[in-house]
Image 1: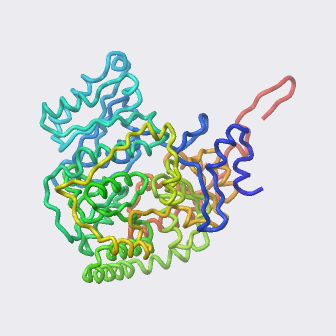
Image 2: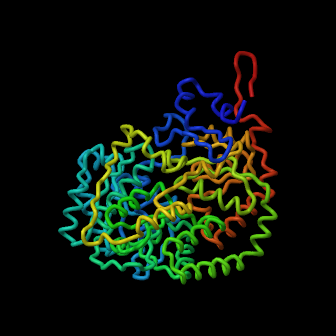
Image 3: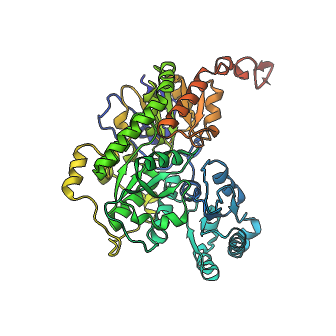
Length: 533
């Protein structure tokens, strides 16, 4: 029985039918495999996904430092999306609100009589106390069910306070996961924020946006340090340590760097259509991948000084980590790992593990679509279901004022032939293979099964499954908030990641764990005259 069959073996016929296409065993890298993704989870299974609201507020909008992002709903929703992220921010103007959890704290009486007045009062207090650049309203499940018109409240607030206020209908039940919320947040930012400043576009400048970087543990700061050191100007980051002010100028960039493909590719595509800004899929997680990314950005701009400076910076950074890199490689060579998180992270972190000789044998995403696994070439073959059609897809047109010249067609195609990932993401499958297994929308049962089968030396996971993995005796590092460590990006970040991996694997505690249920019964009872334990 192969690994895939072993995972599916205990399922009932109905669950087997649902899950069989979500689990793929890869035999050779590069061979096409089709996976089921972006579909509803099986009710009753303990999964690791978030909801639509979590994707909109918790992932995309939450890291904006100068904006009050207010949860209209029960306090638990707001607290979850605030307390489980480690988006760092450092505001030069003093407007840094991400340490606050703004919520209307909807109660039973609000459900009965409506919460619009309470929402208006909450925004009024927030504006008067904090003086934010903008206010954004994120609705949770009960708000959609009772029909509060948050867009009407937003319009009132804009007139009353003269401040941009945007309402997002991102109720948790929409879509099948937090991916729907990413899309909704992208739409709102594109419609109301990006390009709203009346700036002149500077042709042939080295101005870039970083898209899909949320500054977990300071990752975004490390990327900006490196890019500025080479000579690029970072216009805006979406949205780690990002600001409403910076986003209004994002249309003046000359290139978009897409880090997390799933959460932000919608904006990248719309900015290409509206402003003719090319986007390139990048990865600053891992030493070799950072080098590849920096060189491809330099190739795009095709400037001798930028190319020269890129190689100088790469040399300086490699020299600064050479000794530690050698040490951790010697300790981690030959180890195996599992990686299960969201966004592009399950793919990205395979690359930094490879830098230190660690083979990834298990990987999966929480909320991916097929193109995140198989590459964007499968997009024409994906059929939208009812859940996907529930999310608005907006259409943008070329902007007459800000549409500007990018690469000519010949240069664009030349870079594509050189495997520069211009407007393309190859997906995770192409970097896996050789008996590895990929599971979409992991649940706790499947996690336990693959741990038993592959017995990896370490398993990188999210918030909900970390401790279950540790209870089975496997080291588990959390990649949603880095277990209060970081940054993990670029050269120095790769060393921090390797250090934490080394400390986790070699910690003696994992060899000493004996679950109590293996030494004494946890449940005792009698049936007739017989005792059972």
